[in-house]
Length: 256
Image 1 (cartoon, helix red, strand yellow):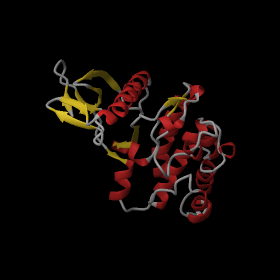
Image 2 (cartoon, rainbow, N blue to C red):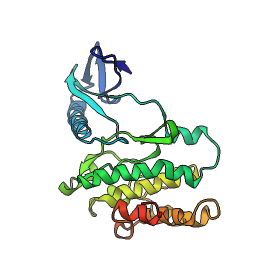
Image 3 (cartoon, one colour):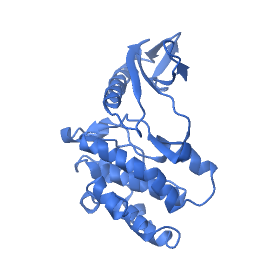
């Protein structure tokens, strides 16, 4: 956390410094060895690509980038500082049952924000509770765009990070195309994790996924059936069997 000298605006500064690859020498960040240097430089390039992408995305539910630059042999992103707690932390601290109203208050803005990204041809590809900051009144802010890519270019997903349990099956393989349906899987998995209070099985573990009781059965009577069926639809293994657009997903929940 810092303040800009020119106007005293409170900001957050994100530094690129992968722990396992780097050492700090004064202010400078350097690779540990020659083998680490290639990975460090590649990661720094992706970090700057994230900053460039974020600075072009303007939305009330996306963290605002004020500046980004190279210094001290590494890279930095300067963002608005927002008070809140991540959804993942909230679920660990708050033991009250999650309601349908809570899910909608958090995920309806998230889906609308991702819809805006998809219209611009951008996928997030790392939606999960730890990447959703809950501000006052549960107003969500989507964080960490390090895995985002322009899906029309169909870059290989292996070039980007993913989170087991939330990454769609096609992110584990280069045999199927990525698309809006990939983010929809992650949103469905994040919603399900709120209800189950646990991370869903990795999508690559097909046996465990198939053994997972459908949401509309496990949480029957607690949450509106339309919402539960929408979550189950979003988490289908086959991409073609999921909602193909966020509009379809919202419509399934009957909350356009």
